Image (tube, rainbow, N blue to C red; front, side, top):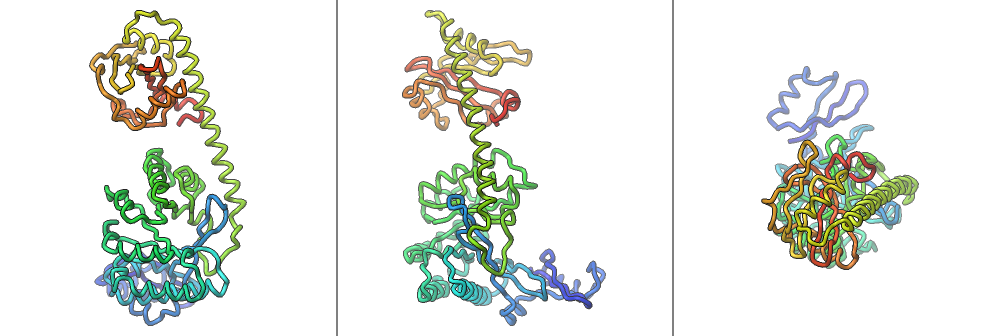
Length: 448
């Protein structure tokens, strides 16, 4: 499956097509009507590439850092030069129908060229290489290890080298080269892996592999939409990465919104067209400092306003609850209490209930119907909610801090909508839970 190069008669230029099978090549060569311009259509053949390796040039895509707000490294990307145009050659290294000997040879040649340019410029930043896991299996990765040794001999500290072991099918393939990966890390090389959400056990695999960098591609954000649910996927990944000592690198960042998403999701490193396309050379380390400062100031301001809105809502609920508790009678049952609380917080909530410190629901649910009337749903009594994430942690926090807690956004199972829950200690043993609907949150600034 190879791209095409089109060469016009008057002025040479090149263009990458959708990949097609070898069977289709002859059809393209024989049927000029399939081409939208007058000219000669030539398949970009792997053998042609190998015979013209001098036209395969390393380009450098900057990697920027959130903490230093500087360029901290470069991803090495392969390009085929055709006249004044360039064609990205990633497909060559990913196409396993191409003999591995070709791919190994060109990979090593690309690395050598990149290192030659790097040393000529007295490079001090990190260099990031992609390497197919199948190629690493060949001779236990000896060709790559030899190249790393050559880098050391040139005086390049291997801690500056990041190697992303690329898997086409499953991250489980990485386990087959684990020993080679561990050896490379012992030399000081940083290893990167791509997050693969089709693998249900990816976190378990990452625990075994202990990569230095976990790469997340922003291309899943279709049409630059940023559903809040995606953040729920990547924030746990950021927490996990922190536990194993890894860093998140967000790739393919094209827009301000994607950069914002990556920042909010715990990314430390970023790269993509939003900052700069890959170029033949290196850039000043402060090239994007002003852009990073401006954008991150905006992010921080927005998050600060959100936090203020959440604290304001918590205080409002706390004050209203305290007043409602004063109006309660000593002998009132739990169901009466939740009805009184629900009516006092009518503008904020659609459901109220009481649980004990073990998570056992002691009251019925007080729920608002479509007409705004409060009903008691007794079938919810005696349910155990201790299995919910953060439930027991929040119980302990309420006991220690003696105040209520507003939850993050989450999807309510019964209503299938995003809500927040405010929990408040009635005493050391009982806690009231106030569910706040999406409609209310939507009307307020900073609560979604």
